Every structure is written in structure tokens, then in C-alpha cells.
Length: 476
Ligand code: PHE
Image: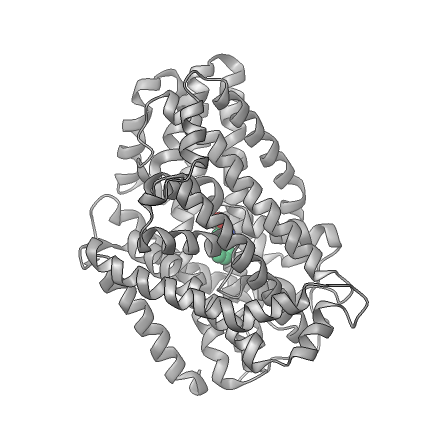
């Protein structure tokens, strides 16, 4: 059994700015720019967005603060953070590591698409705007091409994570996050200038609550957790590298605001253009890969080409700064708990992820095993986004509220009283009572509704896995 403490001083973030950028880099990714727009489109628009925002403010913010506090207090990665306090809680960290593996079982596939689109745009995709939609469909269902791009994307991840947090991850985030933000603003401005753009804004921001059902509410909750990188120990792990003097509340507020800002911006960049081009809001996972190239093709000329290239470079980088954080959760578990050297940990974790990604990518072309007629890509997405993250977040809150001690949490969050946090009591009560209860209700209703769309069985399996992990917790 490896120890949870090492004699070497623990790697830590070089500067406050570096940490905020790295945490924001983890949060801002495909979740905001790829997943948020198409999920909002499939879930009816405005009402979904309104519920999502409520969840971000009341649940996301509180859970992120909780994860940072747990991580910094224990100074070990996800599994160790729970284990070092109480072995019965180890399963929460283990579920987190499992979520990391499963998300990395499809995330690099989409990351690979983003990188592939840089190449495709550079080699003339925009010159035949009418073919952009079909070319996406045939590309992702091809058995070989997406796999090569996925492999390349995974190599980038390995390269960054092998160098450790304060080297690779921090640098990549610091330079490239602001660039991405700027490009998105440009895309949004262009989209809004198109005729008929207003209908897109209305769809996105005018809630029609008659479209809301339990599946939509669970989708909004899952999206909030996925987008903020919560419920799987990622922010616990990042917090464990955080120096004691940083202001956790302020950091949480900044990361949450940036993440939500980028998601909204992505919506504003995408929906007006979609309505202008009469693309269905429910067009699904292809949305960014179809709408954005079309938008730039419409713009035409060298400027259109250049902006399209920059957009997909930005998207690839945003994806990268998120997936390195997912890989880091698994890697830091192998280092802290299994005593592996960093390179060995990175290579073994990535090998497993590569295999999962092959299944995920092939499933989009209809090849490979299915479960309840669902392919690997959708299984990994469903299990993590709809079950593991939200339920993981619920346990993080129960752990903080009922297992940790209120006074110690207050000391951690206020840096021994040096920082004022007048809302501490509100935060504590939300975490202890309201959030666990809210998540339980949303999850139960969502799983029940899932049976109508053939997704309930897989969600139940997810709940079963958590149950088994909890029962075995002392042995984990
Ligand atoms: N938040 C990331 C995104 O939006 C994905 C992610 C989820 C990263 C969970 C880490 C943990 O793309």
C-alpha cells in the first residue's frame, strides 16, 4: 500500500493568476463550446438556459468552493483527500477517478475532431459551404480518420501532463485562454450581424417553461457539473496544489463567472447564426462543427478563413486545457495512491483512455458493442454527465457538511479568519442540507424520465456502480 504523503515538497501553482487560469482552463472546454449549445438546442432553449444558470449559481459555485477547500486542506488528490479523513468515504474519490477515465473515453474523440477541423479548413473546407453539413457526418462515422486525430490529440495531453502541473498545464492555460475568448467575441459579433439573428437570441434567452420536464432539469444539472469540472475530484486535485494564502472564495467566483460567460458567449455565437442559416436547434453534437464553418464560409475571403482557423485552434486548446485536468485526476491518483512515477502513471492512464476512445469513436459509425442499443460514446457520456458527476457532487457536499467539521471548514475558507466571507453560513447550509437533497430529487426524477427515452437502464447501472463502490468502500 502506498502512502498518501510524500517526502518531496508537493508541486504547486507558480502564481495566483496561473492557478485561476488553470482552473478556468479546466472548466472552459468542449463542455461550453461544443456541449452547451447543442444540449440547449435539444432541450428547448431558454428554459434550459435559465435552469442551468440557477444551478450554476446555487449549486455549482458552492460545490466548487467545497472542492477547493477539501483539496487544499488535505493536500492530496481526490481519492487520498477522502481516504485520509475517513476510509468509508474513499468511494467518492474512486468514483471521481472512474468518471475521469470515462470522460476521457470520449472527450479526446471530440478534441480530435477539433484538431482535424484546423486541417480541414486549411485545406479548403470553406470553399464548398453546401457540403459542410454532410462532410461532418461522414467524417465522424469514418472508422479510421477520426481515430488518427484522436491519437494525435491524446499525444498532446500526454506531453503536457508528463511535465507536471506548474510546467505544462499552467503555461498552456495562461497564454491561450484569453485568445480563445477574443475569437468567440468576434464570432458572436459576426453571427449577430446576420439577417434573422434575433430569433436565435430569443430561442436562447426567452424561457418557455412548458418545455421543461425532469429530463431537461437533469440535463441542466449535468451540464452545470460537466462545464464547471465538478463532482469528480478535479477541483479537489487542483486545489491540492494551491498555496495556503490564496483566496478560495474569490477564485471560485472568478472561475464560475468565466466558465458561464464563455458558455453564454458560445450560445450567442452559435444560435443567431443557426437561425439565420435555418439549421435545426436540435441538430445535435455536430452543431459547432457545422454552424461555425458555415458562418465563416459566408464571411468569405482571407478574413473568414483566418478566423475559422483561429476558432478551431482556440477550441482545440480549450479542449486540451480541460482534458489535461481530467488526465491529471487519474494520474495524481496513480502517483499519490499507487506510488507510480509520473511518466508511468501518464502512460498507463492514457493507454486505457485510448482503448475507450477507439470504442467511442467507432460507435458513431455504428460499429462495436452496444448496451440497451446505446453505443460506447453515448454510454460514457450518459454515465458521467447524467449520473456520476451530479451524484459525486452530492457526496462531496454530504462529506463536507456531515463528516467534516464546520469550524475547520470556516478556517480553511477564510484562511484562518484573514479573509472575510459573510456568506459562510449560507454556503454551509446549502452544502449541508439543500444541495444534497436537490441533487437527489433531480437525479431520481431524471432517471425515471430516462426510461421513456431508453436511457434509464444505463443510468441505473451507473447508480448501481456507485452503490457497489460505497459498499466496498473500506476495501478500496
Ligand atoms: N469542464 C470541462 C469542459 O467543459 C470538462 C471537464 C469535466 C473537465 C469534468 C474536468 C472534469 O469541457
